[in-house]
Image 1 (cartoon, protein in one colour):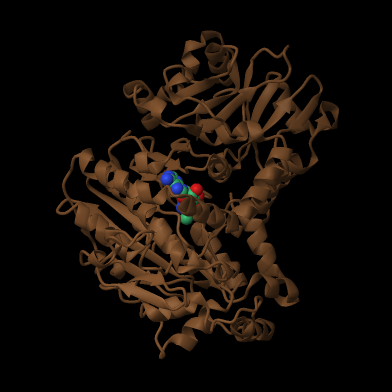
Image 2 (cartoon, rainbow, N blue to C red):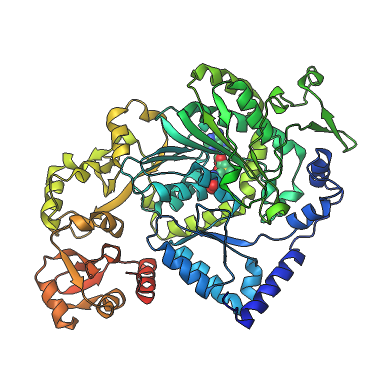
Length: 633
Ligand SMILES: C[S@@+](CC[C@H](N)C(=O)[O-])C[C@H]1O[C@@H](n2cnc3c(N)ncnc32)[C@H](O)[C@@H]1O
């Protein structure tokens, strides 16, 4: 085994020792409603109480995963193990390159020895190579195991960590289709902001109430990551403890069950639904799954997927749980069955909350078992199709309950408290300030205008770049119509699966409230005198590079490539003679530049009348420089 440097050993000991001790938030667990409740329902016992408290009271380790769509994962994995030994690869998450650092953010900032770890995380995050995500929150999408060309629905998707995880695996398939939805428009825009970074053509982002989501597709898989009380995330959001009440879980139960029923209706026969919460409360977990199995018997079954995570310790799934009410004295009281509740007004207890079916096989994750957050996941399979009427009447019945002011208020508070989302919001605000707002649209899918219907623009593109006119991809390019019958500033590339939707199911589409779809690949040229109206942008280059026959140059050395990235704009007479000769042969306008013709290295420059300028922004230049420094091409 490779010997660790003494300073790394010191840092490791420092982190591992201190993280357990550290308390950022002073909270007295004894007699807290949170602990009392979990003791009352038997989840916390005298034996595990201290372990449970010390775990939820300590901060979470830093975790991240390598994004699935990057091409050089093995190389980065090697670089991590050699240069950042404190990042430990997570063995039980076999489908991911996931890592953990046993130190929290504050500690990292303070310790100079591991400053480089922080820099690594920041750089890689900004370069789109990694995603900072909690380990247990990687489980639902790992189970969905998205594949190219599948049709997947992510019902409650914002802010989007699981959407991204699935999309990364789907992007290669032209028949892939991912619907990612969130009822809150604001959060759906936040979702779009995150998803857009992936440059996917197969994602449709919507903002609908998923308890009524239209059957737009025969979905292979549905992720139902429902709104929940979030008490499994206490380790990163301690404030949850202060406003925790046993009512929260009960208030959300009916909405969660409605969403799960709809998910099971929308998935195709043989397809799977992953239901998940970041809550420990059986009211939001086992009881929801048990009720869905009961209502949809015999059309749905539960599948035990524990063996997909070798070495990970799951808590036993509960097969019995009390439905709890708090007395005026603050002590808890439980009902044995719904018969005890009928007639007691205002109790807000529903028959679906009581144990009905065996839910063995659900994954219950408690923080102290593996030093993670708390989570709950169920993997369900639809064995037979069933009629919509079966779930419609149930959802209608459940809705009477969750539409109460109290339920809505609980949801609102939960959403406001999510710090992760606040971060995303801040980033989005910044993005808006950067005037990139037009990247996110709101439009009707059925109203998109095919590029080919605009003959002059189409012919110009074919001619200028030397594209093959017959290439099928040009059937997938669309404009968004703007108010006064004009065309949008950008041309979108949509996957052929989205195109099929537009052409084959136009009557279903008006039911969707679209927030974004496809990928922006060409944008309008500002100079009205320029011979072509639209120019390719970086996102488009990744896709169209191999198809471009004209307007391309190859650089032979890293030095030349680096010089262009870092020194443009330059007048033609300031260019190296060899480069100038290459440029002289090309038309005014966009030129695609590569290092030795390697597609991943391609970027665009603009040839003006006598100046050559680069069209990469700061982040894109940083990515290019990183690739040069690490010889990644
Ligand atoms: C736990 S969060 C989802 C987290 C997300 N899956 C992720 O990994 O980033 C639950 C989301 O459900 C949304 N939501 C609540 N009710 C909904 C409904 N009826 N239909 C669709 N989304 C809903 C909330 O706005 C919230 O963003």
